[in-house]
Image 1 (tube, rainbow, N blue to C red):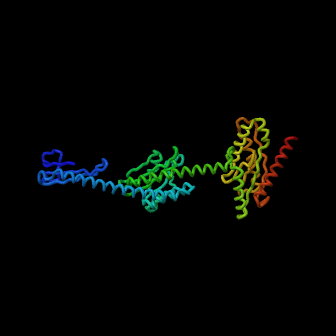
Image 2 (image 1 turned 90 degrees about the vertical axis):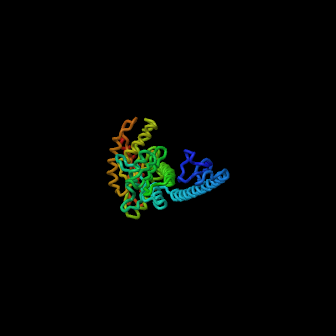
Image 3 (image 1 turned 60 degrees about the horizontal axis):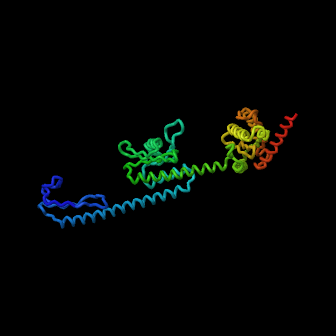
Length: 387
C-alpha cells in the first residue's frame, strides 16, 4: 500500500486534481495478479494514517477476491456452455459415416447454433485447379451458399496448414481452420463473423475442427476397411462374396424392370502350366495384369470379380448375349497383346456367356449355364489344339 501525507514531495505521484494534498493507495491484487488499485485522497495534508492504509489494504484484498471469484464463475460458465455445445456436436456427428453429410452437419451447427452469418467446409482443389471445392455451406446472404471470403481463407488455411484469420473489406472477419491428419489435408472449416471473432469463438471453431478431423479420418479408415473386405487382394477386382451380392441386386432389378444382362465366366487357359513352368510369382503377375486389362476394357458400370483361382466373373448390365460375345472377342485380343514381365507367350481366355432373360430369369441359373459353356469352350479349344 502507498501512504503519502504530502503528495507534492513525491515526483512519481500524479494527482487527478490540483487540490489533492495527501493520498493512500491500496492494490487490488490476488495471487500476484493486479486487478487495479483503490485510491483515497484529500485536499488536506496528512489526512490519512496507518489505520486508513491498513483498512484500505483489507478492502483491496476483499475486492480482489470477489473479482477473482466473479471472473472464475464467468469462465466456468463459458466452459460449461462450450462443453454443452461440443457434446451436442459430437452427438450429431458421431454416428455419421458419410464425410459429405458430416461436413453438412458441422456447418449447420456453426450457422444455426453459433450464429455465424457464413460458414462452409472446403476440400482441396482438384489437380490442375486452384479453387477449393465447397462441400457444404450456409450463408444469410441471398444467392450465396457461403461467403466468397470463406473460399479464399479456406484455400490459404489448407496451403499453410495453420489457422488463418484476417479482416475482409475493413469489416467482417473470416476464420478458417485446416482439417488435417498425419500430414494429409482433408479440407478447411471456414466461418465469417461480422462483429469479429472472440477468443471463445476461435477456440470453439478450433475444437470443432479437431473433432471433425477425428471423425473424418475414422470414416476414411472404415471405408478403406469395407473396401478391402470386398476386394480380392491380389487382383484388386471385386471378390466372390461382393460380386454375388451385387448379382442378387441385379437379378431383382432385371425382374422388376424387365431388363437384361449378360454373365461371362472367364478362365485363364492352361494356367496350371504357367504356374508349373514360370512359378507362382509369375503366375500371380499374370492374374494381376490380365484382370487389370479386362477391367480397363469394360464400362464403368460393368462388374468384374475374382470367382476363384484363375476364374473371373464378368457382369454386363443391359447387354445381350450376342453383344457380350462381340465384347469378348475384342477382350481376347487385348489380353493376348498384353506384356507380362517374366512370361513369354499370350494369355488365353476360356469363357462361357449366358444372358438374362435369354437363358433364364434368375442370375444364379444364368451363372450355372455360363459355367457349363465355359468348360465346353475350354474342352473344344484343347481338342483343336491336340489335333
